[in-house]
Image (cartoon, rainbow, N blue to C red; front, side, top):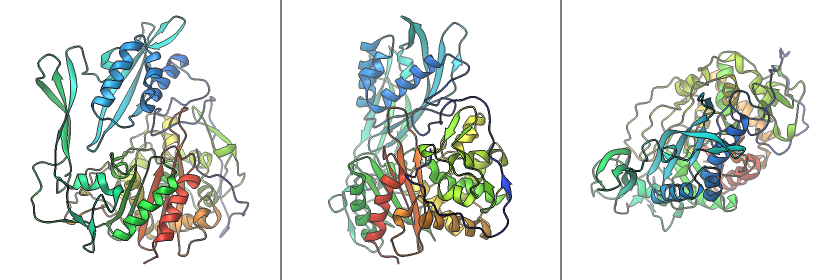
Length: 541
C-alpha cells in the first residue's frame, strides 16, 4: 500500500506534451499483497484464492503471524498438538535468543492425500549476533470440520526432532573502545543506541563482532552434530587502541534523539555520506539488542519506487510527464489498492511518484523484464551484492518474481523484496549522485562490489521526483526545513494482525538518511517526524 496520509490538490507540472500509458487490469479479486512479514505474493489477506483450500492457507498464514508476533498460545491453538506446540515454540525462540521472527509464506501445495503444505522462509534474528535464515514447511490437515497445522517438530525447523535439538553458543568479547571520525570517544554510555554496533565492532575487521553459533546437538549426549549458523568474524581483535569509525558524534546524538519521535516503537535509522558511503549515524530503538538498522530484513515499501523508477527511466519505459492513470484498484491475480482507496485519474508519472500511487506503478510492470528490477538494483544500486561494512550486515534481496502477482508486488517494494535502513540510505545516495559507494563504518573495509553509474539524465529525473515529493507530495512534513531536500515515503504491510511498517528516506547536501518504524502505520506519520527531527538538529554542511 502507498504510504501517505493525504493527497495535495496541486496539479501536476507539465513540461511537454504527454503520452498516455493506460493502467492494465487483470482478473480475480483478492487483496493487496503483504511483504516483509508473514506473507509472500500469492497469499494476500483478503478475497478469494485459487488452488489449495483458502481456509487451509489462511490458517497457515495465521499460525505464522501468531508465531512471529509472540502470540504462542494462539499459534499453538492452531495446531493438532497445542500443548506440545506451545512448549516447543517457546523454548525454540526464547532458548535461542530469537527476537521478532520474520516468517514469509511461499506458494501453497496440495499433496494429493487431502492435506495442504505451505512452505515458508524463516528469518530468525539472534540477539546481538545476526540473522539465521532457513526454509521449512507447514503441513495442514482437516480436523473437526476445520483446518489445523499438523504438529511436527520438523515444521519449526527441518532438523528439529525427538533425537536432535538446537543450542546457541556465544563467545564473550571485551567491550570495544571507539572514536568518531574526528577522534571523539564513542561509548554505549554516551550513545546508548550504538550499543549493538559497538558490540559488533568488538570482533574487529570485516564481519567482526560478537561471535557465536547455532549448533545441532544430540539430545541425549549433547554431542554437536553440525553447525547451522555462525556469526561474527574469526579470531579476536588485536588490542591496538580505539577503533576509528566513520561515525560523526553530532549526527549520532541527533539520530538517537530523533528516534524518540518513534513513540517507543521498534525503529532504526542510518545516515551516510552521499559522496563516499561513509556512515555518519546508526541508531536503533530499543538501544540494546538487535542491530536492525544494518542487519534487519524489511520490505521497503514505496521507498523502493526510487529503484523501480530508475529501472523504468533507464530504458525509456516512461517519462515524468507521461500520463499513467492511478485508479483505486488494480487486479493482478490479487487486488492491489492505494491508501484509503484513493485515485488520481489522468495523473502524470511525476504525480504517481509524489503521491506514491501503487496502481500506477503496478500498471507499468510489463515494461520491465521478469528479473529486470533485481538486475537494476544489483547493477546500479549494489543491492544484493556482498557488502563489507565493518560489522555484519544484510545486503538486500530482490528475487526474480515467481508469478505475475509477485512481480506486481515487487514494483512497490513488497513481495519478496527485502532491505533495511542501511540499504535504503545507500539507494537514496546512489539515486541522487548516480554512483554507488559501498557503505562503510570503519576505514579499510574490503570492497568486492561492482556497479555501473546511472546516466546523468536519470539522476536528474530522480532528484526532481524526490524534490517534488517534498514540495507537493507525501513528504511535505520536511517542506519547512531549509536546503534542497528530496525524499520518499514508504509503507510496508506485515500481516492482518500487525500495523504497517512506516518508512522515509531523504537527502540533503552530502547526506542521505533512511528510517523505518515498525508498526508505524504510515511513513509520513511515523518515520517523517524522526527524519524531520534529525535534519532539524544538524545544520546542512
